Image 1 (cartoon, rainbow, N blue to C red):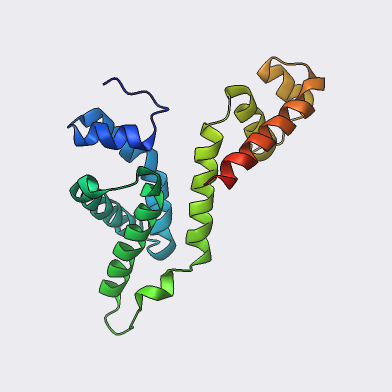
Image 2: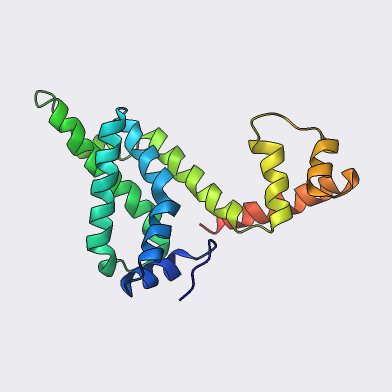
Length: 177
């Protein structure tokens, strides 16, 4: 099986279960930011976040054969990351009693999950629509329509309609999650 960067979670999980190391590397790369971001909410120290990341990857490796629905993988990873992060926080301070349910409705973790879902939905858009939306809404420096049109090789007049179609597709993808 030859993997491509647009492999679905299901394809990656199946390839991992078949023993393909490249698939495992791609699966970890795909979710590395999500795991680290969720860990950093509770464990701001880089060493602690790295420890949580390794623990989550180990648990994923061990439990991958039991994963029933690859679409639930991001939520499962966030849940396991939160649990492992709570364990690290408990090790810091044995005097403070922390309950697992204190972290289930953490707005930062929910925002991370939503951001991850948005990234996955953006990945499913056609290249031109995705690039346009990234230039318009996610660029570090604001770009003019003329600069965006030049970078995309399209007329300035097509930016509005392309943006509208891209946002409509993005909205549908986000609603289906």
